[in-house]
Image 1 (tube, rainbow, N blue to C red):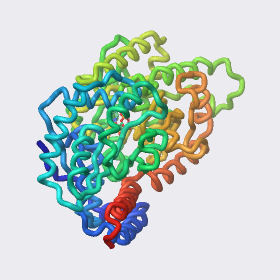
Image 2: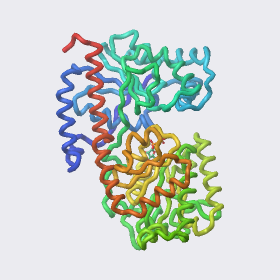
Image 3: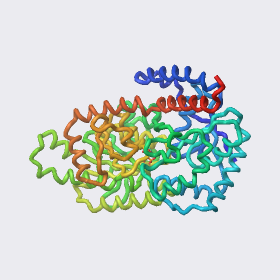
Image 4: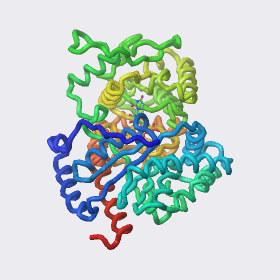
Length: 495
Ligand code: UDP
């Protein structure tokens, strides 16, 4: 079975073009498209993945496909479907293996399931495809179907891999060994970072970075009243007077000293609008480095009284600084038992802190029932943070870095592969070498909290860096280039 999905994205190129600091970028994209599309020959672009909703790929495809269509590409979106749970168990394991985890014992029964479902999906997709199409296949689930179609039809095929690990392990070898026969027919592959390209694809792969949409609820500019309204509606600040719009049906909840969860304004307003705020927003995943970040913040606070090197401003910044650790409401992630475990360990560590440190740290659960409200809350939290941290032990790319960079926050990231793609150290943010070292984290926070001018300079450069490289327009440009190059290589005799 295959589903034809109509990409829905409410923003047009003209909307982007009407924003002052985006208009030149959109104009240059239109020009680039005009010259490149002559080489694309009116072909159809067909993208295929395994879900129409949920997950980064499904979120990224509507803006990408809508912009490509507006630029004149005949772009389509297919989603493969199957009832075979064994297939998705296998592809989930392949996903984990590519990240260096999972069960590396793959054998003939796994190939049998993968081949059977791939053949079914290929048959369903064949009805939709035409000779001359360029097929772009996302991640391992539809890879087998794409390979069969490339062998059978006069089409070009590109495999887009959104995952990766920067080193070879028994697990990654097992995954790439399994996928190798299905990769062979592809004309080209696309990865997020050069470190992720496996040996079997060397010379046949291009880098395209993930990107953010500057007019999405998560990244659009918020006027002061919008920002404060979102924080009040989600119970992240206590309003002093009447508020225009009603409170969200679910508030953000903060862990309390007794271990319960209450609206985040309890036991008192946290000071998001006035104090120096350090924030990390991520899934509750061990690899996101929440624990050493909390330890680093605690050790920074512990050391203040004994220090003799602090001027008045620096001392006040350290005394007032507060840390927000935010992530999705655990009730919304039933399929993520590890997330629940990590959050409860973090809560246990918090409960061991003395009351004055508990007052300086908020562990916050963000409501997930409305995607729009969640995105607005993330936006507002990032906007009112002086420092945004992403202390990941491992990070594929890290949109949680791109997003605050776009908002001119001073970002402190770990040196994980994805984060290094984005932050040039000391120019667009700080890079922590050892995300497991609370001392290094405390030093980084101390340096940033002491120097307002430095934070502002990092923020300015970060915004420019995202503007030039990690907005959806840069992604569209890279795709246009790759599509025309692939067309020229596959059909060299066509003009
Ligand atoms: N995010 C969110 N709500 C949360 C936690 C995270 O909307 O409570 C978003 C975050 O803003 C980002 C995405 O989830 O857009 C996470 O993407 P990233 O590439 O940083 O990491 P991943 O979760 O894919 O490992």
